[in-house]
Length: 93
Image 1 (cartoon, rainbow, N blue to C red):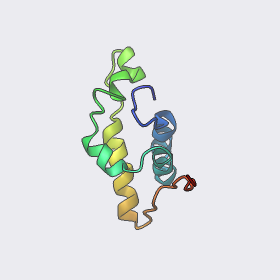
Image 2: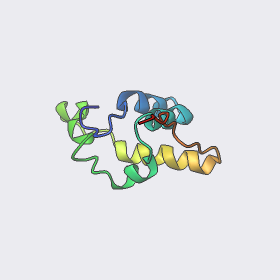
Image 3: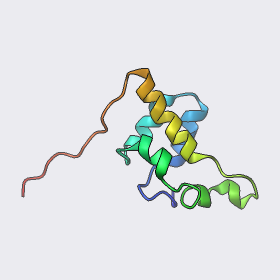
């Protein structure tokens, strides 16, 4: 999570993908990111989250976070169940 500029809970997100709970995976992403389909394609994951992946420390290839994020966003869109992320309530100034 340290390498993610928007603070996605990557371990929870990946666990949900592993369990094939794709709805929960996208909910996890949308708690902190409003644009998972875009970020999954343009965010430089290899320098950020994948660069600090625990697997790299074990001399293994990092988890492909970008591809998983793209998959979850595409799955949601293709399922017809796309939901806008929750937004904070407006504050009166």
